[in-house]
Each structure stands twice: as structure tokens, then as C-alpha cells.
Image (cartoon, rainbow, N blue to C red; front, side, top):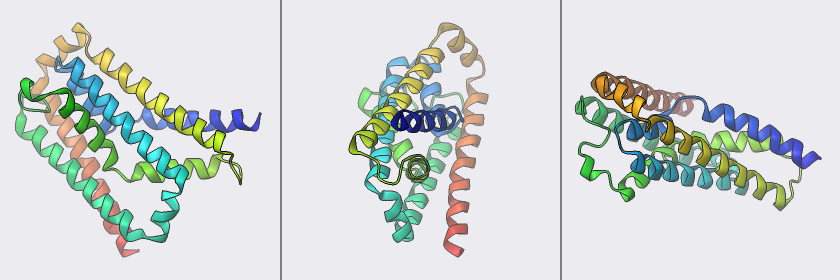
Length: 209
């Protein structure tokens, strides 16, 4: 019973986090809406792999490692912030183009890599999972509970991002997106840029603390 309660708590917190628009959501939805459904699916797989890495790392104690070596966390946050700013710059410059400038360049490997990098360069994911697991797990969680929690995180992430790829690849959505592609890219660039700047500002604040 305790295990079920713990998993339900983690599920609710993770679903709430997934539903909050961020770089992962923007990436998958824009690829799908740009008539790149297959690329969006592979980007979703990349994002899911990133979630698996961070959730597994949290279970293995990377959150504690970040607390012991804050410089490592700050370095990863800087890398993540810079990466998001690079993505935002590409979006802004592309104007009416898609996230990746030519359709031919959106290979399965490129989309997967982009999804993975978008998720893995945000160390706040590790802090999120570390905090959620620390708050939800009992004092001595069993290996079965830890594996079940990671498996649930992977299932949540995969289901959510595949659903986004499906919904945004519908003809009605693509038709509407094609009419506002330039504006949508600029808005997405602004959101991703704010996320990147926010991560860098938070890093500077943490470094001064």
C-alpha cells in the first residue's frame, strides 16, 4: 500500500511538471506541426531518454552529488542555459522556417539527438527528480520501488510527448500552424530564450549565494 501511495504521489507531481510548457514541449509540438510527425516522434524518444537518465541519476544520488559539488551543478546549468539560447537564436533567425532549417536535415538521428540534448542539458530535471524522490520515498526505499518510479517516469514522459506529436501532426493543426509559422517561431524563440536566460540568471544567483 505504501509503495502504491508513493508511486501515485510521484505520478501526480511528474504529470503536473510535464503539463507545464517548456523547451521539450515546444520542440516536439513544433516539429509535429511543421509536418514532421516522424521527426517529432524521434524527438519525443530523445526527450524520454533524457528523462530516464535524470530519473535514474536522481535514484543513484546525483542530487546529493550536486549538493556536495555545487560547481558541477552550476557548470551544467550554464551549459543548459547557453544551449537554450542557441536554440532560441536559430528559431528567431529562421523566421518562417521550422526549428531545423530544411526538412531534409530533420533525420531521425538529428531529431532524437535534439530531443535528448534539450532535456539532458537542463540539470534542473535532476534537481526536480531528486527533490520529488526525496520527498516521496520512504527513508529506505526498496530497489523495486526505485525501479518502479523510474519506469513510471519514462512511461509518463514517452506517453505525453508522443501524444503531443500526434495531436500537433493533425491536418487542422498543421493548417493553422502554416498560416502563423513565422509568428509561432518568434514566440517559441522568445519562450526558449526566456528559459535559457532564466537558467543563467538563476545560476549567477546561486553562484553569489
